[in-house]
Image (cartoon, rainbow, N blue to C red; front, side):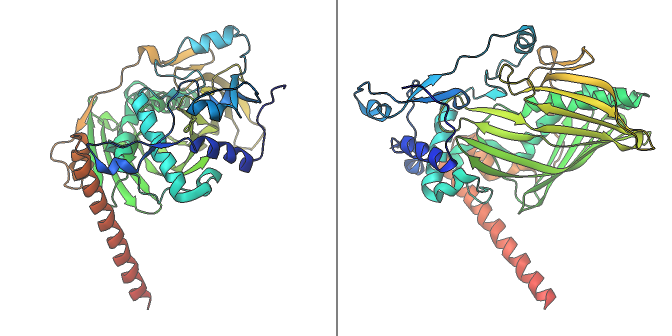
Length: 431
């Protein structure tokens, strides 16, 4: 029978997931009874294929064994990729060692993939198919075993790793276009620094803070300023006050067919001493092949930058190279609009990959192969509300899962109780 790409409706595709989930078996860990509730998807390498390149093939070939019975109804065959041209070769030759052939950053630790799939399978069992149809999972409490010993605030602090290469240059630039180029290079280059660990960061508690010092003299201050929705506010001051990067971020998470979507929003601003300002948007994040295939993180959609005072706007669009290019490849332009509001004029073009390089007008601004992130450490005498003082984080870092889960549960219960108290007080004032 001829093969056909799977373009079925979502509900039919979900049935395929259900078929695979029917093969799930319990993964019991003697050292930690809490792990007994986690369910593990099959780890047979041939069973998992890359979702973006799958075709469904009917087969009558008899197969034996547990997985063979499942494969009697479905088998998977990879679509051949187009021949790589010179442009593709150039992109693929300058990438992070952790980059995925599909695009973005691939998971590096097979144990992480197994654990993540166990937790996701359990969530589907508990919450139903609404997860697969895009339901928000922000209110779900994840088991401590699928968390990393770092909070969202700590992970966010890694994003400043390459700022010292670009934002001081942006501050010194007298040409607004050159300033824009360096801001874009700064924000795109650091995207790779927060990708690669697929374990979930711990959710900050309302009022939790983080203070970080960087080797170039820059300082970061962060605080969790809202519980629901989760909002993290930040203020990053460059050395000698050459720039100020500040704002807030919030996000929500939803599932799709074999993927998880993260939608980030908020406000990001870079101010300079001469009064210049560049605002920065947010791309769309996707964790692909979360149930089978190579698990990987992609940044998709577009990322916008604007210098309103000088009529400059830069938009870069990820995944612009078609099927021959990885999804991390992007193209874009810097456009200038005059004060009279005429048609925008392109003043510069940009191409690159968020896992490899940024080129403006064929001039290399960032190259992952020659970049070293700044060292960073905790500020002296941080506040008692600092993320690194959390008891669940400390226990998790020590591998004490029972103690970490108990501490995490206690923090979440305290936060819910505080929220009820605020709501009750608010109703009392209204009355």
